[in-house]
Length: 256
Image 1 (spheres, rainbow, N blue to C red):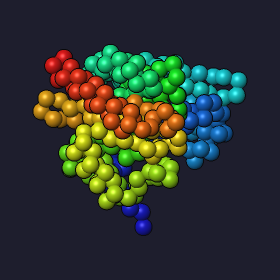
Image 2 (image 1 turned 30 degrees about the vertical axis):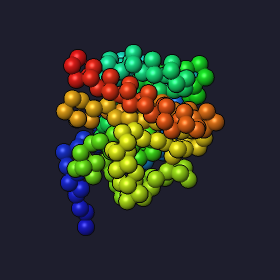
Image 3 (image 1 turned 120 degrees about the vertical axis):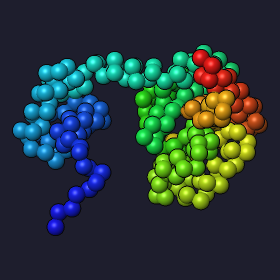
Image 4 (image 1 turned 90 degrees about the horizontal axis):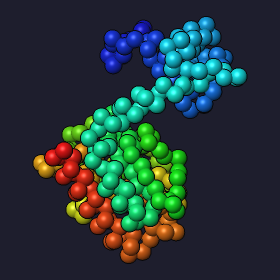
């Protein structure tokens, strides 16, 4: 017997298909009609019609071997990013923080239960990983994400977290009770560590960005390789610098 999923009520299948194609092309770079049809489990004619429509309105371009996303998405992404007050209020402070630490820094906001990087800056020696502006991350795997989870209200945290937490490395905290204990510690000390929990060989220190009324606005972090992020400097000096930068950004965001 067919049962309807209430979460699907009112959703337009064609729109979901079009954005499914966009996300597929984001992952693959370039795909032809057959590849798109296979990936989305749709007919070739349906794939062709969606691709042609997206091409016609300027969101795709033709390349020799198929279709790719157009630069029109740059304008949309920049608009989405710059509407966040934190983007404007954090740039100068994050640049100074990265100059002082000498690694890479990022600003994150939460959207739809995931962390999204809206700004990144790195020093000359800072390592670039798989993350970039617009990258979405599982909150429990990062210093910025754990900082956010620790200081958001309990009801929202429960909405975000699933008891089945994805494990990305052997050090990812994948147990809900263990994570809650870690978040309690983060609330006490005001900062979070990421000890190779998302990427092996990388550590980070994060802190929440709070408004004057202690509302969580987002979080920041600095990250670097375990060969440099270590000792008293990593455990004491960097956290104080990160927390100070987060406080300044929070004040600027509150009164801007």
